Length: 187
Image (tube, rainbow, N blue to C red; front, side, top):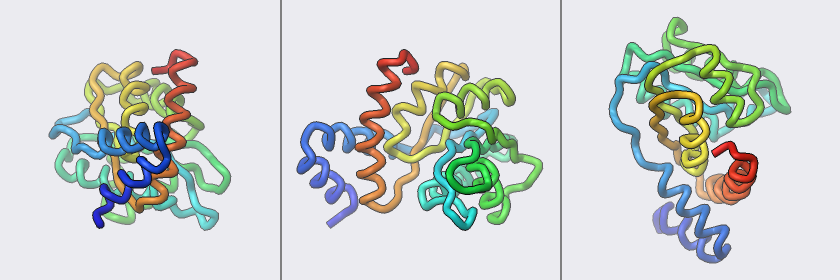
């Protein structure tokens, strides 16, 4: 059984929240249009106790590296402050990317943010660009596009996949986050 089919079945079992989560996953897994981009922005995500990026953050970085290879003039902005474990999400992601060949001269760090809203606001304040590509998890792409579009003139978004259960869990959590952001006027 394919990952998409399993994800869809779980979504159906979980009812309306599951259907919304499945829709977010499907929407966010589309590839982004080709560059050039002024910046490729990697949305922050959890760091493991050993200081390595979580599976989700590593998947975001791997996808960003593919776009960076195709767009050699774009800088790569890693976002995310210090969470439960050091280093900051931005530093962990940048180290991971550099270990995989990203040139240090292309790396920019936004390492103070603690939310998607702050990822966008702080990145725009320190690294303004006309057209950006935001790389996140597929289930987070809808909200990321809406939030980053408040701070950058042109925003494209692409989402990394991953294992089924973390994607389902993240998508279900994301449905609630979208509701909160909408209530607060942040979408």
